[in-house]
Image (cartoon, rainbow, N blue to C red; front, side, top):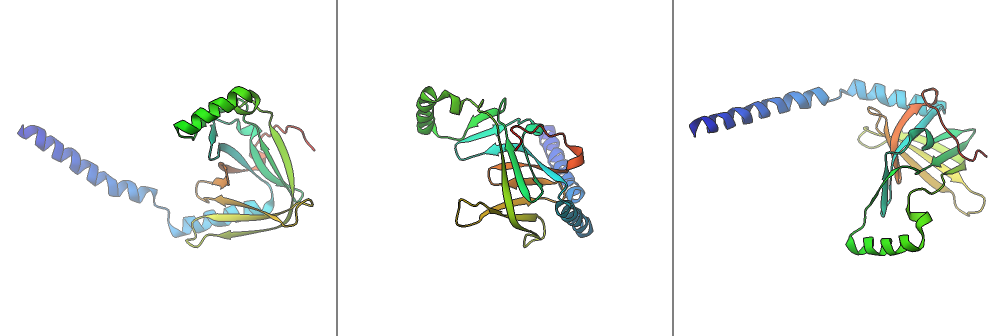
Amino acid sequence: MLTKNIFRILLLALCLLSLPASAKRHKVSAEERTAAIMRTYDLLQSGQWVMMIDDITTPKVSFTHLISERNYLYIEDSYLVVQTDITGAHRATNLNSLQRQEAARYAGTHPEITTGFCPGSCEKFKIASSDIRTNRKGTKVILNLYIDRPHYTKKLFERIVIDPITMKASNGTLSGHIVPDNETLLIIRNPK
């Protein structure tokens, strides 16, 4: 009995000793963060980047295991190009049990919409203006895009939030990571 307690105390002590060391290891210095932010600014201003979409999460459904070459967004000639293709993605519902029953009933009448084998879409939006800034804490880079659509009276607003250390990015329901465009191979469906 006494040896079990001693063993538990030693195990707990080892765990507690390892926590501060691991916290220090993952901490990023102010100089490293500043350098990462400047690299991110340079990459975004060059216009030579692609956000590879890893996940699409909406209030009703999540799509994971997306093929990166078919799901991305980037800027080209003052246009924002967004392509999503959920073919073959892992689909998980975000609904409660009553909503799931309604979705199952709906899936029976509209299988082409709910199976995850919908045709991919590729859209282009004209960018009226853009700006890059950091958040208040100085930990994230925010790219604001103002989309000009002639059929609408007001400009649409797109916001891409980027972690400069990991290059993880999110844009509304889309999340992924940003890479230089020379490191990507894009398969463009329905080029316009």
